[in-house]
Image (cartoon, rainbow over all chains, first blue to last red; front, side, top):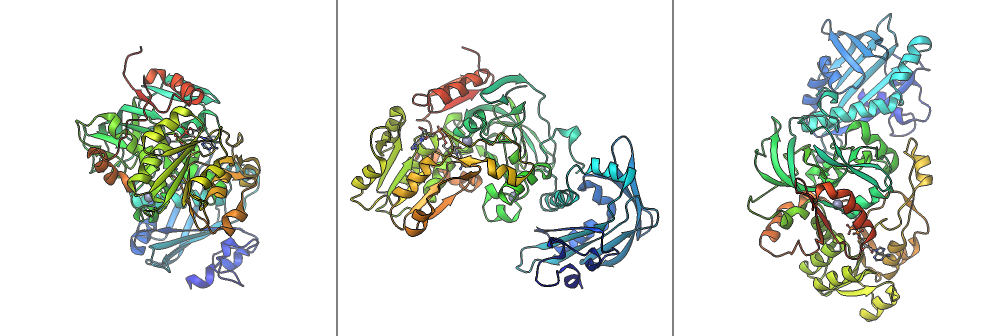
Length: 191
Length: 395
Ligand SMILES: NC(=O)c1ccc[n+]([C@@H]2O[C@H](COP(=O)([O-])OP(=O)(O)OC[C@H]3O[C@@H](n4cnc5c(N)ncnc54)[C@H](O)[C@@H]3O)[C@@H](O)[C@H]2O)c1
Ligand SMILES: [Zn+2]
Ligand SMILES: [Zn+2]
């Protein structure tokens, strides 16, 4: 299953590396014209440990720069708050749509989301025995209007680069127990 | 505390800045007792390396006393005397596990790592006082330094050993050693070394220690050539002779078996005054001057080895790729995997198998660091290595 959702049609590269990807083919709760981004890192820790850390969504703000909080409401439902400039926030409720222990977690935003989005994180043994491949795939409906402007300010870099940075922090935290920073304490990321 | 800060090309100053604090659980804070100015610092001084910010604290060769230790650091204790490698390495990633410490995948913060991803395809390691490409970590030309992953890098040395004897374990000694190791020296080899700065001089000494039959050192500063001679090298002054012809004559027409480029972009450099928001833009701006390296490639014997400790940052024109391929040369290079050599070199230094102090020409109070930079830049012949002492009184 994991394999079939992440591959492009004609070769072995993941769908997120395609020059023009059809988000509907990503196996998410997404539409064809949604923006799609994905990224894989290899982390030198066991699959089960990485899955368990991620599955507790309250851990996510530790390494996701713009995520202010994830409030767990029921075992499958959570409320996400993204801090935006000028005291504003971008929020949504998310529902876990798939949960295969040690392998895959998928989620989708619910009715009323400021940004409609869906995503999945997969954990696979590295094919060459080098730890665990962690792949995040996210599809979202690029927002227009007020929310779009707020988000554009927030992600002054491309969302794709933001996702890579967040995954780098996840790797740093899981491999070394902390998230490196050159900033003084009060400015440090929440590790 | 007091620290040497960068403010622009040829503008470094002593400033009063906030003391560093423990940030992460594996950190330590070191009170600096000795720190040095490196040829690599001149690349910053001349603003050849992009992504410096006004106020950045420079310096990556330093040692001192541990004065604070993070709660998860189980290696260091307050009061220990340590030398700190310039490469910051986590000890746990794919690369650190293979002893490729200067390729550490974790030590460059995510906020800065993307810049080298754009420039080189992969994120470079973190390092002290060496621009935001390597993480923007505050450097060691200061009274105190925060050392991340301090349970991996710092080398604990005996309390009674003189600073100057062990200080260069932080960078230039392992750099010279690795430069020689990358030559894969055989007993009847001739090794040629371009550049008789500190790195070149330690490369000469290391090549002999690793069994080279003959070492030939090349520079144009008579005093630096004298120091190379003291290490046992034969010397060539490139202002006076044709280097390639001299090398051919001295090797019976075979050419040197291995050649070390210990010059780098030093005297010329590349002009990346623009921060890289797009790799393409950056790459088309950046052109390293590789005059020395071209000579190295042309002079090396057929089937020989090239070792490049000299630092380059961008792209280069007229790279003699034909000579490289047709002669079947192999090339090894990179920032030094300092931590790989710490234990071995500390032993050699403590047993007096390597002289580490002969190249120090000047000792200054830290307060006079700006003058130290000026001297090291403008009087290269006499000023071979400057060691700075925090807390020392002005003369
Ligand atoms: N790889 C590493 O980890 C590492 C570590 C430290 C330093 N370095 C680099 O090593 C290089 C040397 O460092 P250093 O501290 O000895 O610097 P330095 O500036 O003191 O010495 C460079 C020497 O090269 C000589 N030179 C210049 N052009 C030459 C040429 N065409 N032929 C022969 N000699 C020439 C200069 O006269 C000078 O004596 C620098 O590029 C530095 O950044 C690399
Ligand atoms: Zn150095
Ligand atoms: Zn590492």
